[in-house]
Length: 249
Image (tube, one colour):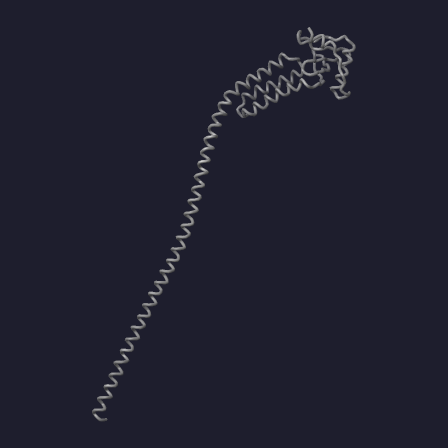
């Protein structure tokens, strides 16, 4: 080969080699640049994801804070209301304690007056009425019975005594160890009838003793009244003249 041609050939080869090397370098730069851009994009994406997550957390926290404020405001109102109710309850307890201090002596007086009534009254249902008073006296000393319940049973006992005035009844009891039929008319008239229907009498309040009855009309009325009390006869007018005489004394 001609010497000049060889030089040109080697120049071309050298130039091609240099150009190829430059292309490789350029491709490497481009690839590195693309990789960096991808990394930057990934970082941007991560930042955006973090931002969205933080924004979501902020919104949630903000909503929770708002709900918490509403709840706290409501709770404060409830607490204030409860404090007021507590003060009212404390005052009521104080008032109840004062009332109990005042009502207990009153209940004692009521039971005592009931006891005296049974003692001084017409002697009907003595055992039953006496037992009732004794139970009331025992109840006053019991700690397991509330004051309201004690007061209730005392009032109930008074009502029973009051109802005696508006009723008529007959029952058996003993007078001087002798069993008789007793007739109570209201709470003021009390009669007896022997079981053989021969002897009759009435309780004289002023003398506090039993008085025998001889009047046949009065005996007949007592018999009729006993039948009425037993519901063996319809209610009818009763004429007991000796009561008028007794009450007029």
